Image (cartoon, rainbow, N blue to C red; front, side, top):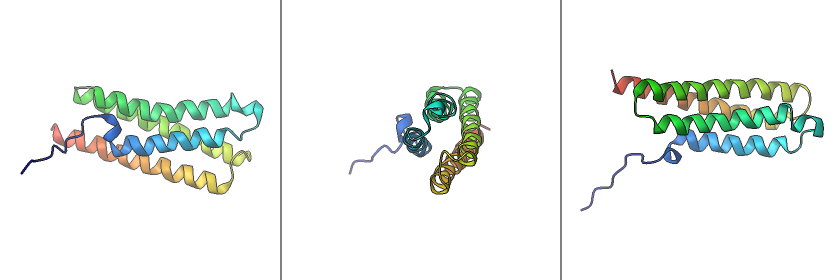
Length: 127
């Protein structure tokens, strides 16, 4: 009987990265419908924030030290909160409807919860 190695080998295997990637794709899709004057203002900022979420998860995964790893995950968390603020703005000015806002916000909150759990896990493993 062969034992399978269940250790995560790449950042793309992290559930939080996968869900964050889904969030990035949703943001890119929704920003396409923004007015032209906003595609390179609020829309661009939303794209950069969403990409920063998954980029920092990936970079944190690649770090060896506990403090460095956690710092990148905290940076990812900050980008996620920034995106939540921008979603509120986009909704309040009428660029995204309530359903899209709710879907994106729900996904963002899920990513935040998973990041918190990942950070707690790393802290508890190394204490």
